[in-house]
Amino acid sequence: MTVRRRLLVPALSTLVMLAILLGLGTWQVRRLAWKRALLAQIAAAEQAPAVPLPAHPGRFQKVSVRGRLLADRTALYGAEVHDAPSGPVLGGQLIVPLQRADGPTLLVDLGWVPAQRSEPLDLPAGETTIAGYVRPPDHPGLFSATDDPKARLFYTLDPAAIGAALGLPEVAPFTLVALGTPPPRGWPEPARHLPRPLNNHLQYALTWYGLAAVLVVVFVAYVRKDASA
Image: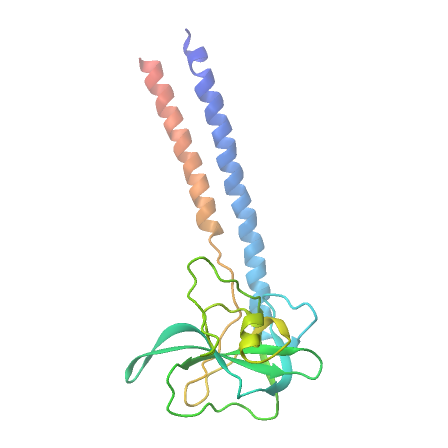
């Protein structure tokens, strides 16, 4: 069997795998350009004034809602430890219903608060405007912690379940995560930025292109070894 015929199958296999690897790398480069454009849009939206909450809000959009906070119907979502001068403090996200004149009651995540508080919450009274972003509902998974509706403590951000525990027959199917800076006492500690999707496409592209280069090196080494045999 001639050298050319012996290398036919390995060469064809290498070309197929090389085409796949280069195609995956090129796809990730295109995804990288799309993701960078999306992140630029999010950064611009973060710097711009909030827009009134639309009927179908986007995930990476800064919106504003006006209404009255129901400070007597609060809940705690999640469990998170923050550092304090006295040491680590366990707390969670403070969920407060916002009663609106132009829509169903909206659950608002005002930010992190200590689970045990020596001082009452200082929430705005009367009509107030809150800027933030929309978070879609979560659903409990197989290993999710169990909610405690009686204690108003939740580990799944499900507006329907939280609203029912707070005695609200109808709530919006999403949560508004408040944006801003902490008050003088430090809590509730709202979110500082709009959510941003991960951007790992450059690493993925380099990985696929790197594998393509390794494949070429291996094939060249194989050809040289076969030729010298």
